[in-house]
Amino acid sequence: AERVGWGILGTGKIAVKFADDLRHVPGAALTAVGSRSADTAEAFGRRFRIPHRHASYVALVNDPDVDLVYVSSPQGLHAEHVRLALEAGKAADLAIWNIGRPAELSYWLGGSPCAGVIQAGQWRTRNLDA
Image 1 (cartoon, rainbow, N blue to C red):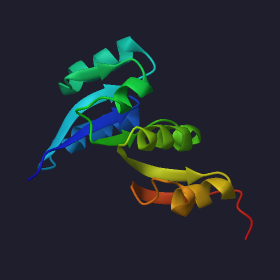
Image 2 (image 1 turned 120 degrees about the horizontal axis):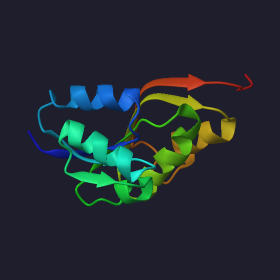
Image 3 (image 1 turned 135 degrees about the vertical axis):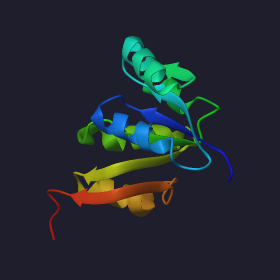
Image 4 (image 1 turned 90 degrees about the horizontal axis):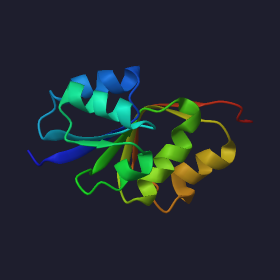
């Protein structure tokens, strides 16, 4: 299988579960983790033997060994963090995509120059008028 370099943005419970499961995926290589804190990135990286440990999300998405970013930040930050990954030329994945405003939904489904490269396990909408 072709090797895909994964980066995890965030180090919470969902990130732990994802990192644990990713090791069972053929061709998947967990190459980097990004956190708001160097200490947290370092601890997470040691736990899962991740070679690149970044103290910022910007550094994570710009890591040349990362092909795809798994966004595991709080849901209210998903749009910002997915956009960060896409604008760095990376694909983005997340378990739950939480859409807060109609403009966000429009942007991600077709208005974005990167539309179509987001993989979400589950889409949620809130506060959308029918």
